[in-house]
Amino acid sequence: DTEVTQTPKHLVMGMTNKKSLKCEQHMGHRAMYWYKQKAKKPPELMFVYSYEKLSINESVPSRFSPECPNSSLLNLHLHALQPEDSALYLCASSQSGGPQHFGDGTRLSIL
Amino acid sequence: DAKTTQPNSMESNEEEPVHLPCNHSTISGTDYIHWYRQLPSQGPEYVIHGLTSNVNNRMASLAIAEDRKSSTLILHRATLRDAAVYYCILRLTGNQFYFGTGTSLTVIP
Image (cartoon, rainbow over all chains, first blue to last red; front, side):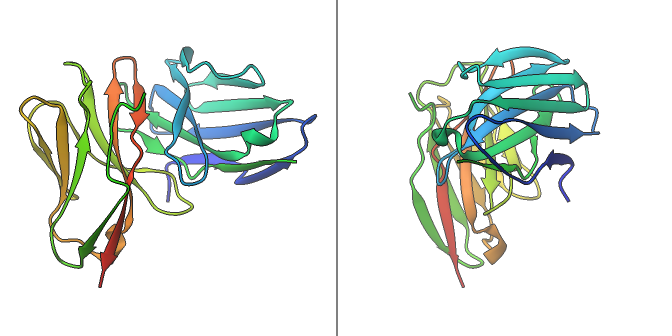
C-alpha cells in the first residue's frame, strides 16, 4: 500500500473544464512535489513545496495551479488544459533532502 | 539538457547480479545520486541514494566513481520481481529531483 494517496485515479475532462487533483500524506513530510509523466518517458518535475510554500516552479503553464493548504495536502488545479496535457500526474513527498515517496498517480485525459 | 544518461534497456538472467550504469558528467559537489524503479501503473519506488561513498541496503548497492561523474546500481541476485524501469536521478539543493531517461530491465527466467 502506498503511503501517498492520490485522487482520483483517472480523470477525463474537456478543454473548458475546471478540475482538481488531490494528494495526501500523513508521514509528517514537509516537502511535496508534482510531476508529469508521459507514456514511456521519465517523470518531469513541475512544482516543489517546502513547508507549505512554493519553492520551485519549473516554468509550468499557468493553466496548472498548485496549492498546499496544509502540511498533509497538495492540490493541483486544472483549467483550460490542452490535449498535450494528457499524462500521468504523480505526487510525492519527502523529508527535506530525503528519499521521495510517490503515489500511484492520476491518469488524466483531455478531450 | 539531460542531467543523467542511462542505457535504454538491459537483460539479466534470474539469480545473477545486474549492474545498471549511469553517467552524470555535470554533477556538482552537493548533488546527491538517487535511484528509483517503476513498475507499470505504479509510482516510482525508492531504491538507494548516496553522495560520495558507496552505499548498501537490503535492496541494492550503489557504487559511485571517485570523480562522481558516473555511478552503478548493483542488484546482487536478480529476481523476476526486479523487472522494472530503473531511473538514475540527481537531487540538487532545494529538493530538485531530475530523472534520467531510465533503463528498462528484463529478467529472464
